[in-house]
Image 1 (cartoon, rainbow, N blue to C red):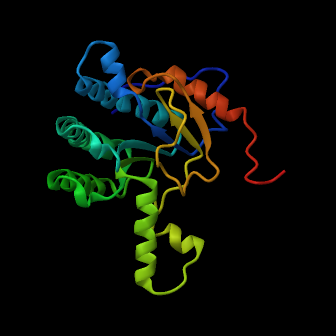
Image 2 (image 1 turned 90 degrees about the horizontal axis):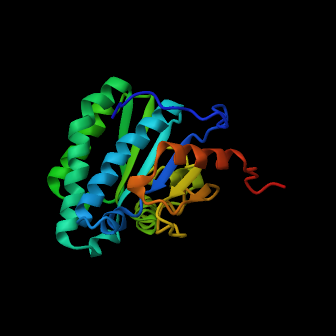
Length: 239
């Protein structure tokens, strides 16, 4: 994961950064198609960009990043594309676990694991356990994740408890228990929608949409997005 220190642009105020960035990584397939390449190579390029952007976010001192890697709706895609995405996730985890531990990076996951390949789930469990005491930075991956599905699973857990539940109690039943809500959500590829992502957690998130496909989303554009975030006045329902 670690590639070297990130260049910081002068207009970026390091004292006013979001604490949790969530990224809807869209456009891998279209990035590849426009270059006359197979879609699977687009996903590979997208995975490589996770490493670059994670490095940048880590260097800036932001505490948490969530990557929307595979949604509950992505099962509609061809099986070979799905298998390739899972292979890329598996390889990324296995190749970077030692680096995560060395750099104090805790790895977490949200989503329904019951439909995922058993060996992939095992990789999730192992890296979660190995990095659970790391406290400098958190990478959270949303895999087989859908906002509605997450809420329904949490509601069913609450029903099993057989008693009324508070907002704080409900949030403990969500996949993101222990993580702060995202301050800033970035979506690449030009689509202007949230695609069933973190529906509960994004109540007061700021959004940034860019036409850039995910594999081409650079450090410079990340910092442009962060400057845009810093120019907003967050009221949280106030005047």
